[in-house]
Image 1 (cartoon, rainbow, N blue to C red):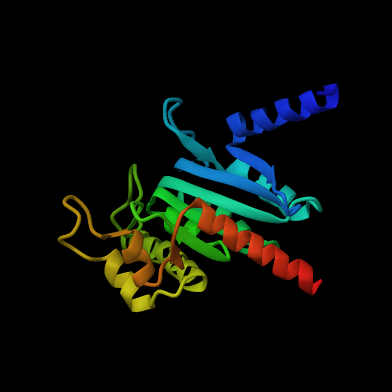
Image 2 (cartoon, rainbow, N blue to C red):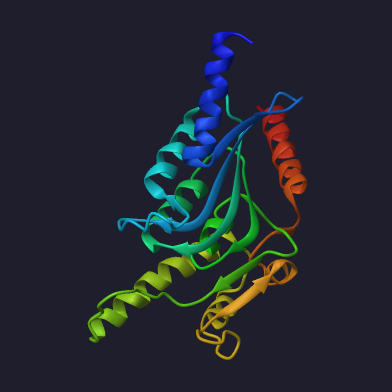
Length: 229
């Protein structure tokens, strides 16, 4: 192994540790960038140091670099998130949905709250049979003024999420809003939990599958685009 190879390996290990991303090359010559979005999505407010988080200031430039990199053919987004900052999550989702390269998402474990837009942002979405997704109304922590303007603000934020999910999935608008406001399913909250097959049947996610299924779709899409170019 040459010194250049050692440096490259060290850089790849550093990216996995610091940014939760890795790049793979297969026998077909396709280069896939794998990006993990895990824990809580951290936005403008810092989370406690012992909280597992995905920082949007790390993810956004990565996505821009992937889109511009001539030697990267596609993006695989691995999701296991409890949600987090709405603005940051929507920002990441918009970046993914705006990419020209083939993108696929895979929900592993959970794609809760703002994880729902992140899951449907890719051109194709997969969910494992045991994974879960929680749909619920917008909630803010901290001091909130109990005035009509505050509730209008909540409604506008919620509408942004609904509109994005409508663009990226096949779920009916009325069905999604009904799930968001459903009572009686969550013990201490309003909303709905969907598991693997349920999320697909509702039209939220495209397919039930695992890593090999997501990668197979991605490689097929890359082959089709290269064949048409």
